[in-house]
Length: 417
Image 1 (cartoon, rainbow, N blue to C red):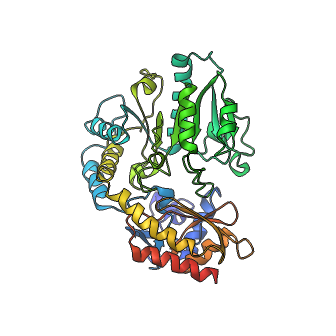
Image 2 (tube, rainbow, N blue to C red; image 1 turned 135 degrees about the horizontal axis):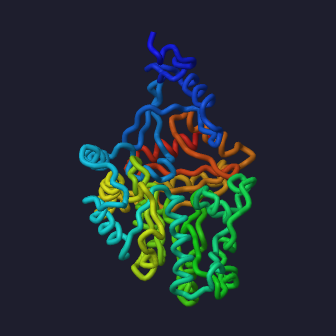
Image 3 (cartoon, rainbow, N blue to C red; image 1 turned 90 degrees about the vertical axis):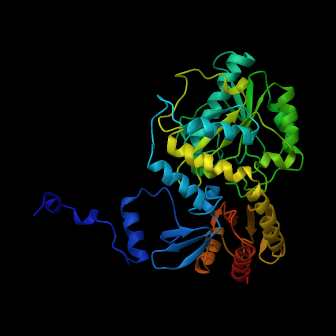
């Protein structure tokens, strides 16, 4: 008998055999995973484009797309090819050395954003943390704020990640409660209220951090012109505008960035999710030299940030966006989605908010919760995610066609009857 076979629990460590039913996979996960998520009862084993297949062979339209991490669909051929080619060459050097993939990636991402420099990281939360550090260091070294007094204004209802500092600026009790003491230095104003923002700015304010559209909140749209007003106000006050485009950026709203919808160029773009093509975590802070130039060797870093594999995939993502085809598709399919959703307002849906292929729908709470709606859509072959009670978010991959959007709309009509 081998040592492995003799050890207690050896059989428990074996992977589930092909054909293992859904309930056994879920039982295994519930036994061994911390309960920080509450997933729907589906176990996905394969995916392609806008479709996923579970362990029992059932197919579903993915109308969540990994919270926009899968803007280009599952296993996009160009992105998979870039990853596979790089896997055979070089995956990691750390930033202690140069790699031949990082410079071209950063050059083309900066060009796409109309900026001069890129600071690559891995996760969206890392990018937000990096943007916060950027703003504070800029405030002390460029604006001249006394050390230790820098303040950043944030929006009520925000979602920027789950690190200790980021949940310190959250007003969501589920994300925030029982993780204190909290990081100081943040002031909160209502999302969309320009007057409140102006009143909150002081000499110690170094930045305004916002999502152009609040995704986790339910695809919450600000009033028309608000973002332009914020840009004008921050420019006059010598305050950086940090745009968290982790969910809203990279084609999701029908433009490269959601800020483009109002002709606004922030000082700092915070990017992630779709930048990794659904293959590897890739994030970045993108800004001009007068902002990101505050960093010096050793003042910030990440072992995996900008690794060759991430750079290869990220570069392939930038190449896809550079054509403009995906932005156009998001506009066209998004208009079709919005038209269909608007027809349901007053027929089980209280309100709809759409930008490109991104929608928040408020279901009549007398009918069902958002969680119940997600379960019913699952039964009809559509995967979505609820948020904040009776709200459901829709974010299908940008590769969906009109027939797939119609399938999604039909499924919604069906559950609302």
